[in-house]
Amino acid sequence: MDIKPYNIDPETTFPLPLYESIPLAEVTANGDSFAIVAGLDKHMAEQVKQHSLDENDADLQEHTSDRKRFGEGSYEEWYSKKRTPFALIHEETDAVTAICWFGPKPLGRKSLRYLTDEEAKEEKNLSEGTWHTISYRCYNPYRGKGLMNDFVRFCINTYTRKFPGVGIWAIINVDNPASKRLAEKLGFKMDPGSSHPDENLVVMVLNK
View 1 (tube, rainbow, N blue to C red):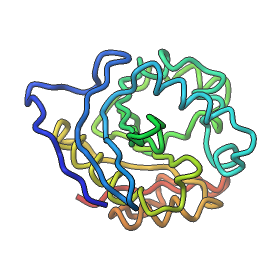
View 2: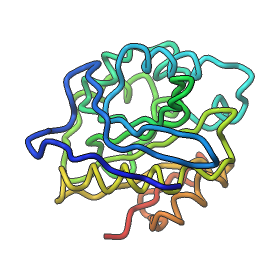
View 3: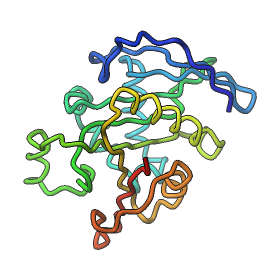
View 4: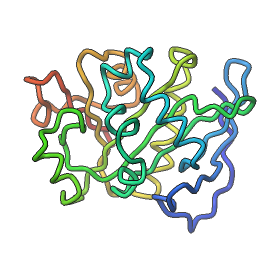
């Protein structure tokens, strides 16, 4: 993947205003042209919702909380938790091919689908602390095409320049080895003390 970053206004802060999206880089990969953007406009957010409701995407339904988070839930409510999404956009079709997002979240806090009703109610009141979570998705037919390593690495570098003092962590279902392999390639290491082995969830922390 060849990534050519744009010069971004140094005064830009994350998260952007709701439904604002700015281009960060142009990308060529596998003979296709893409763009990396920060923030999702309404058209992009609607695509993410439709992907999240896709019953034919067994991997997404089985290994993520996206159906509950984006498909059935409110994007606006999710965004209000200071989430910063990035997207890889296929230029010819304007399709969202992959997303990666970050936001403040205590180390080891489980994803939405694994929370009890009581825990879910507490989400908005959690202390931000110095930890920010990362999640990433690649959608069909682009999954397995080798796009994610460079895309997610670019997103991490862009985000941590804005938040230089935070730790980045991911929570991954052990039945999703592809996600774990990607995290390892990006420099994440397992944190047994924060993981949830009884629920097949491992926490991985980015080595600084």
